Amino acid sequence: MKDEYKACPERSRFFYFNNMLRIAIQSKGRLNEDSLSMLQSIGIEIDDPKRKFLSKARGFELETLFLRDDDIPGVVEAGTASLGIVGLNEVVERGANVEIVTRLGFGKCRISLAVPKNSGYDGLFWLEGKRIATSYPAILGRFLEEKGIHATTEIITGSVEIAPAAGIADCIFDIVSSGSTLISNGLIEVERVFESEAVLIADKNMPEEYVPALDELLFRIESHKTSRGMKYMMMNIPLASLDEATKILPAMRSPSVLPLASEGWCSLHSVVEASTMWEKIRQLKAIGAEGILVTDLDKIIL
Ligand code: PRT
Ligand code: ZN
Image (tube, rainbow, N blue to C red):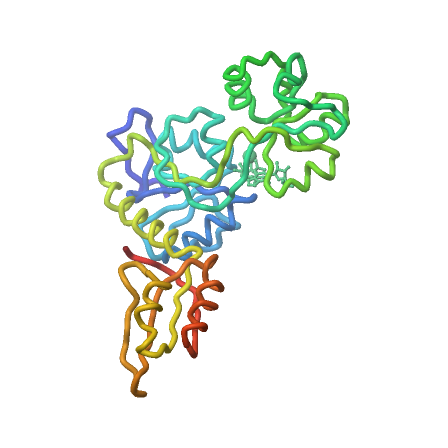
């Protein structure tokens, strides 16, 4: 197996590349499925991802390396993988010297301070002299220093939310997403300190030969991100209402107008944000739109 790999002379450490771009992905956990489905949506299929450590992708010159999320920033910094998909929280906590190429829009969460419900928390000064349990001591340390607060950090690697009830700490600094874990442990979120989501990271010393593949990958990711939350709308509209309809549907340049066999009518096609879709449908119906069709969008190439 080793024979098909070659040494990479550009780098100081000795390791092997299968002569293609390599991306590190979380092997299991919260980011695994979303990472794989994002790759799939941009035409990159990974065979049997559950059982392999290293796998070649189909649809792109890419090799995937499945790891624990904790290891991904370091592996990319060392260049063992040129790219990685990991939470921004992990990259910042570890102080990894990697390029943050783009935010990926999934795995959104925040790291917050949370205190027991009846703690009498009345502002940041409450934290003075307290014990704070966390798995993110570096991010917490920077926050406390910035605010001039002296507190003790208790480093815990799992189930941080039970620390106050267990008497290990007075409050916690942990990842929050829906907030239900805090509620079920009798805690309330009092300060949102760090906003996170999955990011694509890159080795700052990536071999030159991989840059074109990274550019293509990024192009596909951006077109996928642009299409997220957008809908494609088609409808028939009386010609007399066309000007007004164009104002309701600004689209990327302007909506496409196609002739219809019935006189005095045309067909209008446009792209709208899903969040505004129902309001636009209401406005368009009011000016005579009929046969409105709405479909999902897969990619937008700007
Ligand atoms: O095994 P491995 O080391 O790879 O994974 P892990 O167990 O260390 O991490 P994992 O899979 O739990 O999370 C991976 C990444 O997902 C994190 O680094 C974050 O960037 C992101 N993420 C997004 C989250 C959450 N949302 C999240 N809710 N990570 C953890 N949580 C925890 C949170 O701490 C809480 O205990 O999930 C629990 C439920 O959260 P609520 O607020 O929805 O109740
Ligand atoms: Zn982890």
